[in-house]
Length: 556
Image (cartoon, rainbow, N blue to C red):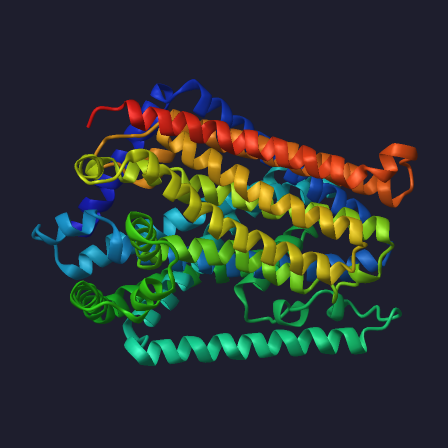
């Protein structure tokens, strides 16, 4: 039996064991995960159902719009699958601690590649069924499909997600193998950023100069529609196959299913052969790169050492955390993907005509954007900020011996998180409000709100991380988050976002619609700002005090 098959069977056995032990998890964690999963499926299904209901109210135009929107939806989903596959594949093929142990075993490197590749493809694609199933299910319920038809749609989804996840891993492998390093890489990144900034500025200027109120061309309002309809794209096969089966065209639908199903083994066989040639060299390149970093600081390290603020212990902790973050692609890629997608959406608000809406609707969209930005910040603060104190647990005794205190350590962690969230929140919220041409009241309220949201989230995640510190030496950030404290932190940060963003949005709406009278109208801004400030200080300050006291009382 090949070693790759043995490794895959061993991983499946571990997965079955983990499923059997799910009942041993904290009740709060099970309740939160179950509630969020059911709520996500129900809300997303309702959203898709409402969208299809609206489209078919347009009459004959729906028969033109729905097939093209199907292809666009699956093209966007495929692009996200490729990003997920690339990020997960890099971690599984080059960075997981398991690789160091497997390299000491009599396992050929190409078998190790087969195992890591299949594992990465599965890990990067399973969550997308929580998007595909509600989309197809909502359309099937609206059109009166049978359960067999929905089952056929699931059969289409399996090869679709595996195909695009594999394409993402393939792209990552090629980039790792042939991406230049050193100054060449720095110049290439600078060139790409400069070109992208120049294109975005030119696109915004062209949009503002050429946009007309009577432009109703679908391709202008839905960029990428022509690309999504290309007959050679797998996303088009997925959409056309499902719709063909829904119309009773079984031969045509099974043709597209065959195309998708046979493309997956062809791609994976090609990846297997490519992996035998590329993976050993790529792996050695990564190992050489790590030794180079250990012996000589990269240009990113030099820049961080030069520009990082603070002095003494505060600066040392800040530099260390910044370098760890920048040297781990599985961390900063998630950060840039989430906030990059939000920035791309905010930049295109004007091209979608939202800046020409009535001020009431523009204000509503603005606060929905602020809520989405705050929700992403909540998720990423739980992912990156909460585990920081626990990751320091194995070396906290050094801090106890050094001329420093654990109290200062937790405040340094807080200041770094607050600075990062503050920069991102102010930049993206200002971009959103600028593209929507909001009145001064909403803009000023947004500038007060987002720094306070950053303060509350960074304080809560850092403080609870100290209060529920995990001292196990081999725990990964994902394992730290899965505990009681991580689940509680995620729930509390989401509740904090709702309580902070919702009332100011209501006040802004009442102000714009002139429903506030007398003293309330005069003092609407200072009263709302005071509410935001007090609540954010309580939400961030109380956990910080509890976390600092917990660290002070621990005996290292």
